[in-house]
Amino acid sequence: MPEGDSVFRLADRLRAGLDGARLTGGELRGGRAAGTRLAGVTVLGHETHGKHLLTRFDSGDTLHTHLRLTGSWTVTGPGRRLPRRIEPDVRVRMLTERGTTAWGVGLPVVELLPTREEHRVIGHLGPDPLRPDWDAAEAERRLTADPDRPVVAALLDQLLVAGLGNLWANEVCFLRGLYPWRRVGSTDVAALIATAATALHASATVPGLFQTTTGVTRRGERHWVAGRAHRPCLRCGTLVRVRAEVTGDPDQRRTWWCPRCQPEA
Image (cartoon, rainbow, N blue to C red; front, side, top):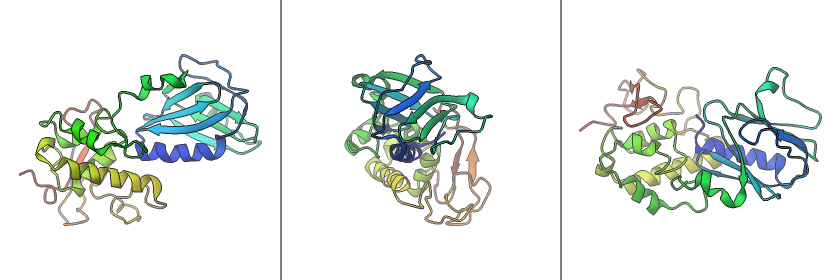
């Protein structure tokens, strides 16, 4: 599933192709508003909160989308279309007066709602390190509300901090030297949040560092533990371990850790 930094970068690409442009064609092909025509509105801008994308129109409406595991967005230039084999999966199409077209493909969440009611779809989320209203103190308060929760599960909970997915939950635990199932209340939560926020922000904004935690961009060396099961730890050489599920995580995502750099005791 794309993480908050992925969606942040996606919003930047969509801004370049859509913001300030009037739509001359397009429609919603998914969700309850399927069939809604978009021609005649102007795209005011894009905003993200965690893994949620908001596209605002001058009509007073907002298009709320979420990629989850299957969704993607593509922008094509004037006179260009998607391959025919992909077009049946299009859930949103927006053709601008500039001739560019944005295609939302395979989107599992497509919702049109009044902009004044955006809180209905993002109001439940925790603070997002990539937003200008990022509140580290509020993130700390939420993370410590259940001190017995495993740190990796707490980091994955979008109600506590928005935008951290499985990659970042695993890598942040490594960077802080934390056994993933250690009680979050027994950690330096302020430092944990600072590390997570710094890493996510660098990934989203620094050219060449997208989802690179080691500082090395060579294939197979970008991550300390994520995806490196049974391979030597890049720091100490100990074989990285993996567990097939995260306690308290309904999606049962994998967890990787180095038993030497992240001791259980």
